[in-house]
Length: 334
Image 1: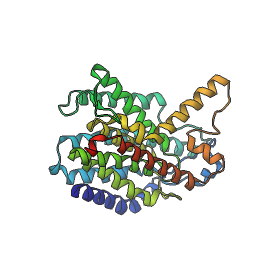
Image 2: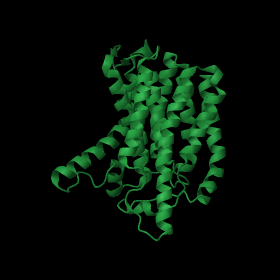
Image 3: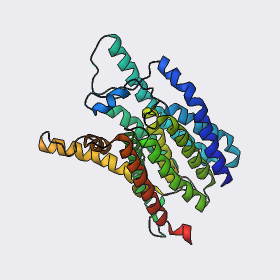
Image 4: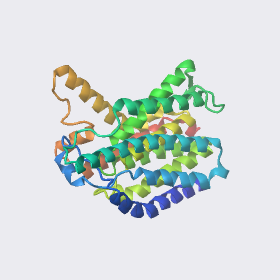
């Protein structure tokens, strides 16, 4: 418990201290957010807000893991590595967006609706990283191919299905976290609450490395929220959202609790599902929309709800889902 508290405070302090220095640095590099013309009009005023703040979050986790390296084991290093890898994929996407945007602006061009890596390029990188993680986990002596089943005492051995299951889980969670990052403080707050579940789970079941790692993620989210809450002074970008998604899913893998993301991370699931339903319905009906806009947080915006109200409701929903997740862990109450 002491290590968890210290890890939270250290990662929080790193982000709190470095972000104010990082914001003007990004502004000088013209790393400002590009707002889609098809998005909610209320977001136009956010254009130019520094993005790629996820770099500071990754640094906060890195510093904390280095400090506590002697108190943990190799699992902490691998969890950090996976988080940084997905953060790097997000960084590449953010960087390409910024380069393309600045080039178009300098040439007097019209900004296109989508900038950055092509979806196929991003997915190829994500699946490659996820495949390596899945194979590593399957042959890891303390992980193996079994997962914990919510609301039971069962450990379900997936056998050869474990590797494809983990690959899909990783890619799904990383992209769901990325889709959730659409309103000030939304992805940061939701992820922080989700990771709190894994922190409690890790503490209750003796996963020392994962409780330290979980605490470091909570700390950077707390620190970043001070600057990312509405009105945001900085955005995490794909750099931060993919890193957070990678952190959530790697913690679940090491604790063999992947299925609990469906409960605790229900907001992630709904955000991603809303996009899939919107695209499928649009294609099937020849242009009609199921929601006013997807992901679903934009649907609520276009219904007239204020951004801060939507974010708060999503945080509350996640907190309730986390409590349900804790109730689904009978091992904690034995």
